[in-house]
Structures are given as structure tokens and as C-alpha cells.
Amino acid sequence: MSVAGLRRAARESVSGLPREFWWLWTSTLVNRLGAFVATFMALYLTLDRGYSASYAGLVAALHGLGGVVSSLGAGVMADRLGRRPTLLIAQSSTAVSVAVLGFMQHPVAIAAVAFVVGMASNASRPAVQAMIADIVRPEDRVRAFSLNYWAINLGFATSSMAAGFIAEYSYLAGFLGEAAMTLICAIVIFVKLPESRPERAKSPAGKAAEPEVGLGTVLRDGRFMSVVGLSFLIALIFMQGHVGLPLAMGADGFSSADFGMAIAVNGVLIVALQIPVTRFIEHRDPRRLLIISSLLAGYGFGLTAFAGSIGIYALTVCVWTLAEIVNAPTQTGLVVRLSPLHGRGRYQGMYTLSWSVAALVAPLMSGFVIDRYGAEWLWGMCAVLGTVAGLGYWLLMRNLPAEAAPDEVAAGVVSGGDVSGGDVSGGDVSAEVPDADVPAKVPAAGAVTPSGVTPPAAVAPAVVPSAAVP
Image (cartoon, rainbow, N blue to C red):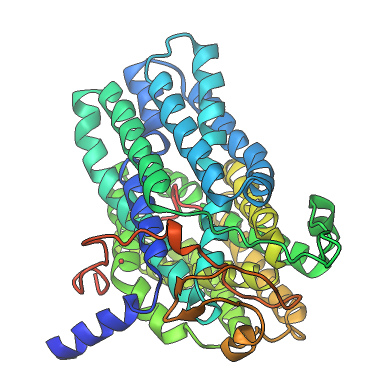
């Protein structure tokens, strides 16, 4: 492709999205640039503080348990309080708790604060995903979620390299650096992001015209809860890249540097291919994409059973990384598609819960299987889980309702303004078509025009889940 073609592709990848999305994208990137605790907690506790590996594992489990606890609570907050207050509370709490963690000395205090850090850091995810769904047009959501996922991985990959040098100098500097970066995110949200939660339609009597969406509503939604279950299976598979793979490579006599070389392929491919692959799949059938990505994930890890060299390990990483690139934005878009307009926070919270629980179960599962039966059985289980997930998506989505078209959304939904090019200007939401999937109206008074924030063309051609949950 020529240079002009690359520039055109870059413009098309980032065009048409609202200004508010790019402020949210910037906040996500800055937040992940400061990801220190999730990456170096185990090394900090064992090497710097002298604790045992068992204690480090306990602290990591408590950190993950905090994320499980906050997933549903943060989803409820995003719907009741709003996306912006939830993000402010989550980011501010994360900054304070991470800074405090760096000064903790007693093992019980470290474990307790790590639990709080897990709760606070995970609480922003449902609000971020709900806000993207609110402000981005339905036809642009897969691309928007992909760009946000790109920011997560780009920031995490960069921070992992920088944090390694910081840790050699001072672990406390790493904790304080993450706290500062997270606080910057909170400031960006406070200054630049207006509230995006859709207003409820009112009946002539002044009462809400739509029924309240509670957690019970989510739990009774059979199709959606099936998606959550399938998401849990997929998450179990992907988690093995950072749990089972290093254990298996270590058992085969490979060093930590060898594992680093193999897993680096994951980050490089995501940064290089996320945007072009998303452009290719953006308007394709999500059913096929989810089935194919499930099979690629399962059998990509399944092929690891035959790996005996760094090159073969890297090849298997290529296979399941492609599955990750396709699955992440497609599955997040499906969650939005199945979520009612005024229940997006709760639905996103339940979806986030599937990944949080998988983060707890995956280490236990991989350790037990490898110790008892060997790594080959773990990779075989991944292949089976991928097959089951693919079959589940095929059965579940045969009668998936069509998504509302842009012209259907425009008819009678928004008054006093228009939605063009993904940007929202003027007016309020005064009436809504039930079940219509329409971006929320952002009041003009709150929309601040950023200067110099629209990403340059050089960014797009070049945008883990290690710490990145979709």
C-alpha cells in the first residue's frame, strides 16, 4: 500500500468519532501508561519485601477478588449516579489506594490495601464501556471499542517496559507514578467529559415511561447471561497466556527471558494489527466472528502442546492473538447490542464480572492441571473450551435481533438537535423509541472542544490482556 493509501486508511480509522470519545480514549491511554501494580506486584513482594511466593499469590488473588466485588457495584453506580461520577470515584480511589499501598509494611495491611486497589481499579471499566456505547453511533461502536482496546494494550506495553527500569531504581517510585497518572485521568474526566447517561423518557403524568432495570433484570435475561457464560470460557482460555504459558515453558526448561520473547509477540501483533483487522471485520456478521475467534483461541493454545522451541511457541501466540484481536471488540459490541438503553452500566458490569472471575479461576485451574496431569492436558482443555464456546455462540445467536439502523434511530428519537458524524450538538433527549439503540445526547454546554487531541494520522496504523480486561 502506498503512503497516501496508509494515510487515507488512518483517517478513516479515526474519523467520525465524537470529541468526547477521544478524551475518554486519552484517559484510558494515560491510565494504562501508569499500570505498575498489576505488572510488578509479585516481584515487589518477593524480591523487594522478601515475602514467599505463596503470600504473593494470596495478595494477587485478593487483588483479583476486589475486581470481582466491584464489577457489579460499579455497573449499578454507572446507571444510578452516572458514568462521569463513577469514573471520578473509581479513578480518585485508585490513585489514593495505590499511593497508600506503596507505604504499607505489615503483611495484613498490604493484603487489605491490595484488595481495595483491585476494587477501585476495576470499578471504572463498566462506566467506560457504557459511556462509549452512549456517545458513539451503533455502526461505529466496534471501531470505537477496538481503538479503546488498542489504547489499553499500547499503554500497558509501554508501561511494562518503563516500569522495569523504574523498579530497578525504586518500587515506591512506581507506586507513586501510577497514582499520579491515575489522578491525571480523574482530572481529564472531570474537566473534559460531560455526563452521557441517557435520560429516561417521561410519561405525561411525570412518571418514568420505562421499567427500572435492576440486577434481577440482568440475571433473568437468558440470552445475555449465556453470553456472559461464554465470555467466561473465552477469558479462561486467554488468561492462560499469562498464567499457564509461563508455567509450561518453565517446566520445559525455558527461561523467563524466553517467555518474555514469546509473549512479546502478543503485544506487537495487537499494536500492529488491531486497527487494520478491525477495519476488515467492522461490518461483518458478529456471529461468524465470535465462532471463528473462539475456535482460533482454543486451538491456538491447543497447538502449544506440540511446541518445543521458541519459534513454535511464538507461532502459537500468533494464532491466539489473532483470535483476541477479533474477539475483544466484537464481543464488547455484542454486549451493548443486547443491553437496554438505561441498563448499560449493569450489563457491562456483569460482563466485566466474567473476566474478573476468570482471572481468579485461571491460575487455580492451570496450576492444578499442570501439577496433576501435565501441561498437555491444559492445552487440550483449552481446545475443548474453545470448541464449546464456538458451538455456544452458534446456538445462541441464530436468532439474534438486527441492530437499529441509523435512519431508524433518527426518526423521532432526538429532538432539538442532530447527530452527525458521530458528534452530538445541541438539544436534549425529550423522547425515545423503546428498545432503540441510540447514542445518548450530550448537552452542548458540557461539550468542550479539545485542542490538539484528535489523534494524528500516524497514530492509527501503528494502535494485553495481561492487565487489560475488555
